[in-house]
Length: 545
Image 1 (cartoon, one colour):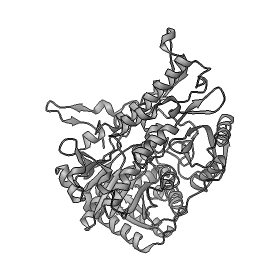
Image 2 (tube, rainbow, N blue to C red):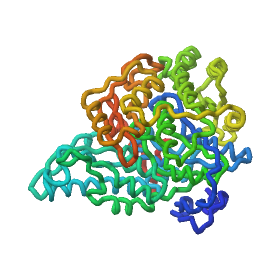
Image 3 (spheres, helix red, strand yellow):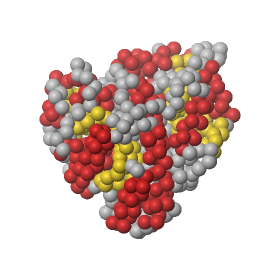
Image 4 (spheres, one colour):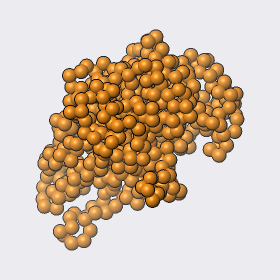
C-alpha cells in the first residue's frame, strides 16, 4: 500500500484537506473540490438476482477502476462501507476479492473510521430523547406513546432484538412499551447521511425525521424533541468522505452503507459528488440486483439532483447464478450445464430490460470463476448476442485490472457510441400505491400488488400528511424478483404483497415492506464470525471476501 497522501495527491487533493487515520486511510474535507465542476462520468455497477454468496459486484467495480487506470484514465471508485452484520454473518467482508480489493481491507471491514458507530449513536440518541419526552410528559404531552415509531439500531445481525419490551420496572425506568431494533444499515439516519448534500442539509433532514404522532394526530418530528443539533454533532466528522486505495493504487472513496433490500442501497452523494469533481471516470455500485439497488439509485438518488444519471451501467452476471436460476441446486453449481445457463438467462433478461427502461447504455459482464467452462461461457456470449446487448468477460478477481481491460474498453465504447436518454420510472405526483404498482409491474414483472390493510392505511395517512410527492423505497428479498425468495428465475404475473409501510421524511421517501422481509437480519447456522481470529502479531484472519 502507498501512503494515503500519495493517493490524494494523484487526485489533486491538497494536504490541507486531508485528515489521515493512520498511514493508509483518511477523511477528505469536501471543500477540497468545492471550486471544481462535477465533470466526471459516472458508471453504475449492478447485477442479476444473486445467489446467497453474491455475484462479485463490488469486486467487478474495483477491478473496472483498476482497468480504466491501466488504460490511462483518471478513475476512482465510490463504494459503500461494509456493515458488521454481513461481515460476521453469511456473506463476509465487502471490500472486493482476490486481486480486486480496496485496502486495508480488514480495517475497512471492521471499525474503519467509525462512521457506522456515529450513525448508530445518533439514531439511538433520538430514541433516548423520544422516550425521555414520554417519561416526563406522559401520553398527553408532545408524543402519544401508542404511535412512537422510532426504533433503536445496532450494526450487528441479532434476531432476538426484532421484538423487545422496554421500560419495565419502576416508574423511573420509563414507559413500558413494545419496540424493536433494526440493523444500522436500515436506519433512516443512514439514509439521511447518504443523501445529504452538506452539513446544513444533514441537520435539516434530521430535523424532519418523523418519530411518531401527537395526541392531535399530527406528525412529531425530531426537531420538536430538539434532537437535531446533538445528532448532527455526532455525525459532523463522519460526514467527511473516506479515502483508501485499491490493490493497484487507484483511489477509492468508501462512505456510508445502506442495504438495498431494506434501504436505498448506495454510498453517500457527498463522496460520489466529490469523486466526480476529482476524476474523469467514477465507478460506483448499488446493492444487490437491478430490481433493488439500481431502481432506487435512479428513482431516489438521482432525484436528489446531487448525482447525475450514469453515463453507462454494468450488469454483473455469473454462470453459477444463471445455473441457480435455471433450476440447479447450490451444491451442484460447479458442474458444467449449458442448458441451465440458457434457462437461467431469463432472469438476466429481466435485468437487461430494467436498465433499458431507464434509457441508459449497458454492458453485461460475465464475472469469471475458476469452475466456469468454455462451453458455458460460449453459451452465455451467444445468448447476449441474441439479446442485442453488449457483453464482456471479466476476470478481475484472478488478474486484477488486467482481467478487466476487455470490460473497460467495452464500457468506454458504450459511453461514446450508444444512445442515452435517461428517464425516471414514475412522476413524483403519482399516488404512493400507484408508484409501488409501477415498480412491481415494470421492474419485478408482477401481475398485481396486494396491499394488506395496515399498509394501505399508512400510505393513505402519509399522503394526507403531505408526503405524496416523494419516491418509494421497496424493501423485499434480494433472492427473487418477487417478494418470495423461493421463486427463482423470472417469475411472471405473481402478486407482490405489501405488508407494511414506514415514512422516512428526513430521507425524503416512503418505505414499502413486502413479503417476509426483516429489517434486523439474523445470523446463519454457521456465521462467518466463527472463522475470524487474531494472530499473536495482531493480524486479523478469516474475514471472507
